Image 1 (cartoon, helix red, strand yellow):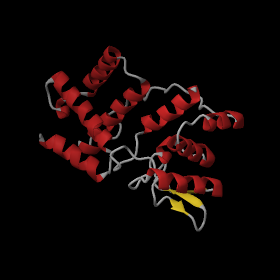
Image 2: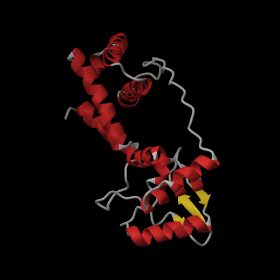
Image 3: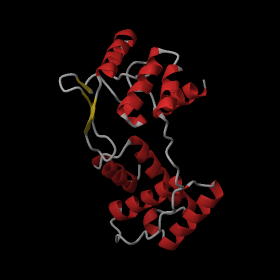
Image 4: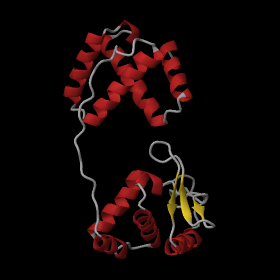
Amino acid sequence: MTPLRQTMTDLMTFRQFSPKTHTAYLNIATRLALYYDRSPEQITIGEIKHWLIQTSNERCWSASTTHLAINALKFLYHQVLEYPSDFIDIPLPKRPQKSPEFLTKNEVYHLLSHADNLRKLTLLSVCYGCGLRVSEVVTLNQDSIDTEHMFLKIVQSKGKKDRNIPLSMTLLNLLRRYWQVWQPHYYFFCSYQQKKPISISSAQKIFTQTKKT
């Protein structure tokens, strides 16, 4: 591992970046260096822009991928190499705006009535009954329920903020029943290895499949 790569890795660890961000940022830095066969310290801003445009067009990058690449470059040059804060002056492309999908009460009722097992019913009921994001649903665990105050404790939600969600007795009883039947290790909606929560894509698949029935 080169000293620059080690410094970048150490700083990302200190900043508590996710493993996924670690991999993505290092991949961008590596691709840039390989393209010019030079260390990033020896690459000019003009060359960086050329590489970014060329690679983005060739690989048909989405706006999200381009955002990630630019943020990786800003981190590398501004935070790791400590170049002036305006060195990477590349504007972020606009993301396509997608309207969230809202279900009516009848649609939610239809969805829940077509959940073909207790696990799907519980996941979807908690999601819509408490208005949770899918990332919050999959990480619900035995410490999330406060029966004394009747709420769900959502820790480090979007923006790394904690929040408490009112919990009805109906949902509490459903969660208790699910826990007794499924007997998860710690997370309510765990993988079949019983050690980690299911992925967000798995939860989304449950919604999609149930909606189609």
